[in-house]
Amino acid sequence: MKKILSLMTLLVIISTAASAQDWSLSTNILDYASLGTINAEGSAGVARRFSVNASVRVNPWTFHKGDASKQMQNRHQTYAAGFRYWPWHIYSGWWISGMAQYQEYNRGGILSQKTEEGDAFGLSLGGGYSLMIHENLNLDFGLSLWGGQKTYVTYACPSCGKILDKGSKWFFLPNELRVAIQYIF
Image 1 (tube, one colour):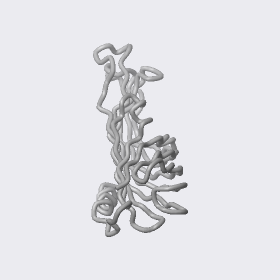
Image 2 (cartoon, one colour; image 1 turned 90 degrees about the vertical axis):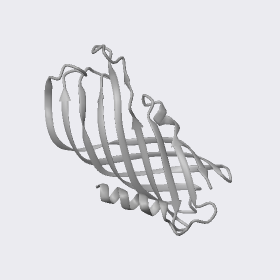
Image 3 (cartoon, one colour; image 1 turned 60 degrees about the horizontal axis):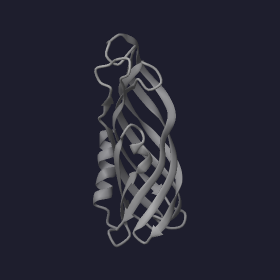
Image 4 (spheres, helix red, strand yellow; image 1 turned 30 degrees about the vertical axis):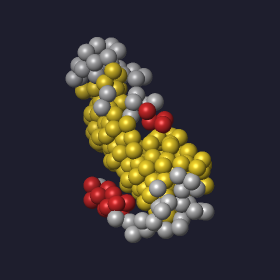
């Protein structure tokens, strides 16, 4: 998985189509509402209708740490690399995406005291629309779903250490609800 992500990141960095309007940098505003997830995505146009991208999302925060009855977290680090197909032209209009993604996570205390931590990897498919606000600025809307395999441990509470379940299983989940500000250069 790390080799695939490294290859996709390398494609973004050394893309031969490096003329004007072929690079972008964006951040998803809605990720910040997910308990402060910091995020960035870089993209490079490689053809009139294709771009490759690499993204990172990090959430290091634990809230109410020390009080097990109130503690909650959605800590994770997520790395993804993929592509977008644009039916009209890159960075404008509708798009369809595919990504390979890896996530190390620890979440719990949000809906119940159960806490789960582990690693997940898989593939994601999505779609959306880029609204051109200015020649260098877009508002990017999208939704994606991902499926794959996760290895996990479930605890009864954030700090007690009592294991309820552990193992490995397949999953299919919503991945990203996207309302992003995208700068194109």
